[in-house]
Image (tube, rainbow, N blue to C red; front, side, top):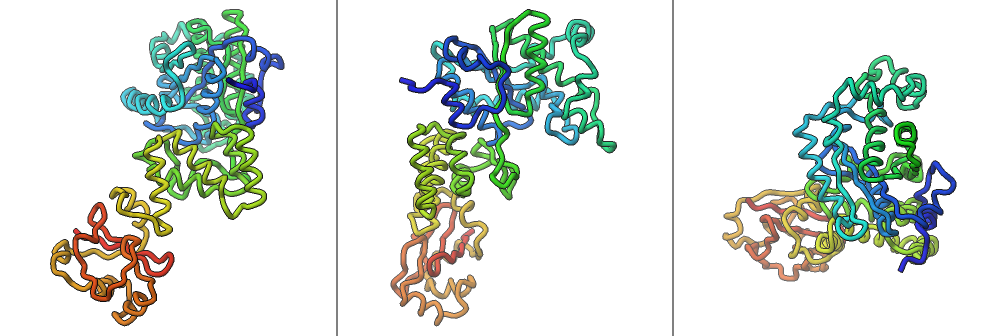
Length: 426
């Protein structure tokens, strides 16, 4: 049983940036609304910059409202100028169709596509690609003031850029998105659009078009744009975007991204990106304040988000891989995960034939550059500081054999607490 109204739920989590009507909270409690949020199909995967609106859709659905996830297969051919300093590369119809299918599977992890308030996944190419230009200009374009469009921040910024400017193609984006709201209102009785704060102008324009042509009462609500506490952009690491697709960003790296969040950010992200209750989040707030070194909030955040995006098995593997860095079991990790953990460590490559020569392990480690001499290797071994695959080596006459291999023909050598070397056998 839900103990909190939808608006109060969104409010304490920090989801509310703007809304078009003061009465919207009461309407959300009294009525069952069909609402929508748009997603840009510029890649075959969403990234974590899309997580806040995805979580917003899920919260609305959990409170009885019917979500439409609108993938912009049509508008994706044009490109939204909002927040962009230059025009994006144009996508083909084939590219967009491929990307839409990738996004579909990711949204299904968060939304229920069955039941009384079953979510819908729609592609606006279905109607936008069928519109005749002259009909669109006559019936839709006449309701848009060029003066108003030129005053948009996204347009004005681009007009002031002498090097890039803005094309008529992108300039027309606002008309297409507004038409989406009109179409969804007529076809599905959709009365609310939600999205990031940068979509406020597009949302209001869509509402105005629905009022003019259909005399419809519609609403808009936006979420804040997520940033880090220092004001920098959220959602990227040194390697680029953090994707929801496991092939683009592995569950291990995905987990590590969240577990490495700062104390200044983690409490806000727990509210945004998990379904933990208010009491649970406030308890983690307390732990951040009183025992930040334990990083309980970061581990909870990483676990909850990784479970939502990749599932329980992937989470377990990511946690096991993280523990492996601190002496945990390596034998259960697959080749890809081992590479992700240790590929940046010093490494040496040997022929597979070496594994059958029964050479002394210490000799091989000297040859690999792990030790400068066999004497140095013996001293560390006697002091209990030599590990292969996180298993301590006690015998000076230990042989190198295939039993020391992990997945992918690798062995991980650790000297001391955290000095790793990777041996590769090919």
